[in-house]
Length: 167
Image (cartoon, rainbow, N blue to C red; front, side):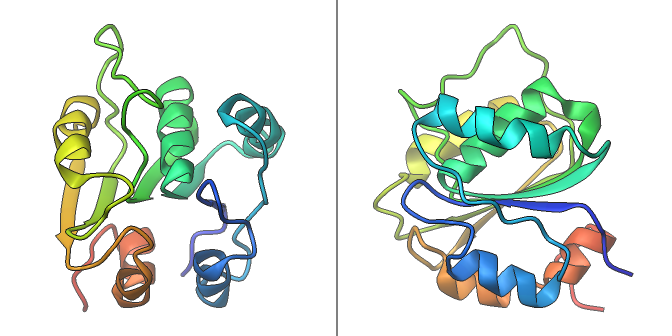
């Protein structure tokens, strides 16, 4: 059984037709992979009508899309059943944790490359531990694009069974 309402949010310089979107579409044929443009505010305005069409989503966010997914989770936690963030751009000045907000309790897996030279691991790791209370943080031997990791993640297990373990 595959989850039906899956949303992939691409990175800043990517699109809904990039490597990860196409790869995930091979596994989840009904995944939504919109192409978003402009600054963060413009992209959030573009995604909101699609996001509000359904009551519950699984969101996969890559880099800038991970930032967007986090912002959606902070504002609409009841509409998201699962988050998978790939090298999320949760770095100042793009993102600063708001101490007045409760931690996000949505099951969340973050995959972050040891060799990420775009979104530094050492900057993101302490931030995510403050904003996610139900977090699995996976540090992988990869770079920011996480192409190798994307191919290795057992996506169906992760999204359907909430586990990255095979079997």
